[in-house]
Length: 197
Image (cartoon, rainbow, N blue to C red; front, side, top):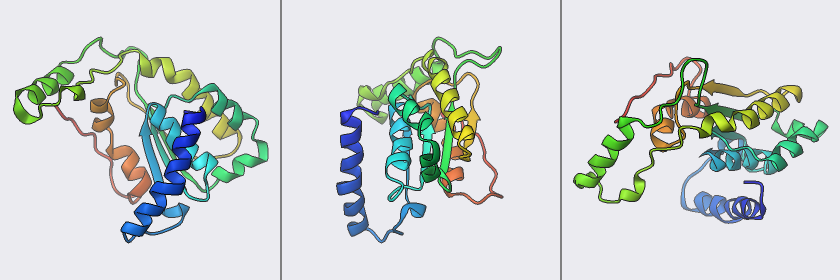
């Protein structure tokens, strides 16, 4: 996140990963051709890449972002500096409790997927992540504040809320088409909701 290791990560991506990828592959260079996507604290890092390094990144997709206080305060007091986000493509989304739709304590799909992994499709059980049923709801105030700050500063963004979605890879995978279409799709391309085991 917005700690020293978050800054170190962003610096490593900017000074090592980006140049190496550009050297190894035929990439389109420039921030208008480069995006980061992340989930949870990785969602905050995706946002920070556009916020702190607009010279390299022109787009960010933040799924269930865990926006921390220091970053929110930085965006709040940025004033004219928020102009660095104008023209950036920003996508925000999350799940959680919405009205009468709540995140179930457990979902069979998470355990069916884990059973498939355990029976030979993939033996690495560390991929089991039933997710936190409470976390997207708990992160909502920070996300609401970021949305309000971006609106206040006149920064455009796309926001999607997935009622009842939990904080895990399966839930993010079920809606991965939305951020990808936002970042790379054509406006006339319809988004469809994917359902996986």
